Image 1 (cartoon, one colour):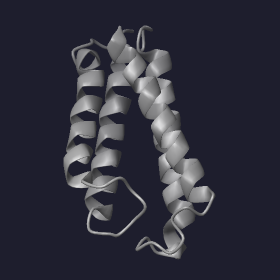
Image 2 (spheres, rainbow, N blue to C red; image 1 turned 90 degrees about the horizontal axis):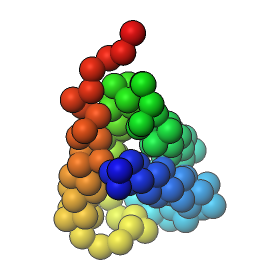
Image 3 (tube, rainbow, N blue to C red; image 1 turned 120 degrees about the vertical axis):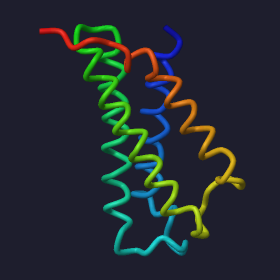
Image 4 (tube, rainbow, N blue to C red; image 1 turned 60 degrees about the vertical axis):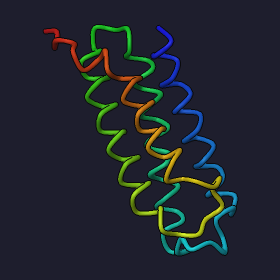
Length: 119
């Protein structure tokens, strides 16, 4: 069940990212000031979503946890693709670790994607 704990790791990472944006760490970056709050909301949704995936991972709602996880992977893909060309306070080589993060997220939810919906 290590994969389940990876979803909690994702929740923490996106939660910290939310706090970073709200604390003004992205002021002066290429991310337009007008979207800072929206970006914080999106990261907060991702943090909450991964927390829900963690909670539902071993429940009878694992089917829905997998689908939510897939949606969250898509959110991260969109976030990564739209911010990749920007100069922001991110670790270098986002074009390397971003896809690795996507692969890790897919690895996390892979067992859930084979679950059957329960009635």
